[in-house]
Length: 386
Image: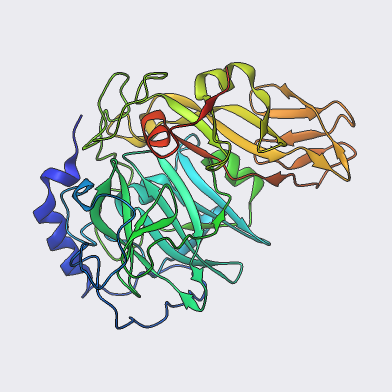
């Protein structure tokens, strides 16, 4: 396994500094809602154990440097977008993060996210941060609004349980990405609202959103977009980077899982199990969620070229209720589904494309495709669905 962002810290810092003088990137972008001003409070980024701050929620000694300094992995604060039809640099099976807010549909290619980890954006008029932690393979979108604040996030350069630790620029509190919670600083214990985000193939997203917007590679910095700086990181039997948590022996550390629920009833299904079944109905926190799997998604953490990564599968999680009745589904072909009740055809993105329910969109349920070690460390009581 090569972690080139660790051995190349110097070049990362130089590139970040050079980007300050770079011309504004070209492309199509909306008006990004700016963060509120920096507040006059002590910074946990400077000193986690400052006595003027609330007690951290975790042992400060376990929040460790991952190598780069703050924003050494530069977040994207002024994202630009291309129209779906103008994108010619993504392979059909490459992974993209799909986010819909109202009628605003956007794709965030992993080949860009893997080098930046955070995009501060505004989607459907809503300030959001779209985040991706390569070390946990966790993609999560957050609402940037917290009480009267609008936050913007950067990469702290630190890890907690091998997972991305973000910081907000308004108070410089430290946030656990997987939890969406401030673990140190002025905003300790605050939590962000999440927005459902789905990892799908470029071809799947392109077909569903011919008029959508795609995060551009014109980011203001120079990176080898399309290449994976974590070659071999998801190899079976490999160890997580700088992980000091208690390993849960029920599954291998790097087993890919689809997880649902929160602290009350966390649930995990292995990607292998879901790929075999294609459709699984799972009870979570007293309600039913339907999980789908479709073939074709490439791993972004395998080979040097992301487009050449081994083939995995796309997942989706949805509420099966439509017009007061619960639908049941079966797979059709490699990437579609049909319901028993009406015979309508559905895509992996939860939209009916044919039949009596054509045009209907299932309500997406917050779920996460990640590694077992990462989820189990934060949710040790997780129930595994066999």
